[in-house]
Image (tube, rainbow, N blue to C red; front, side, top):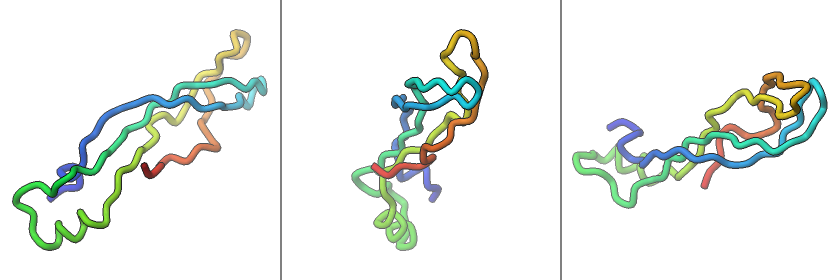
Length: 90
């Protein structure tokens, strides 16, 4: 079975404080995350190997945004999102 069969996926946004490297302005940005929550029960048709994998897996979030646009009206440049982990366990 594929990994997606064991999770329920949804998208969410979370605020993060980032600094623009060009104008050095700090501001709060809404970053997009993919949330994968582990199902309560294993889906039907799983064998012993799938059951062992399912027992180990946990719910987690993956960062979807890799760039943000500066909110300073004079700057407005796109910069890389850094200083934030790309994967977070729930």
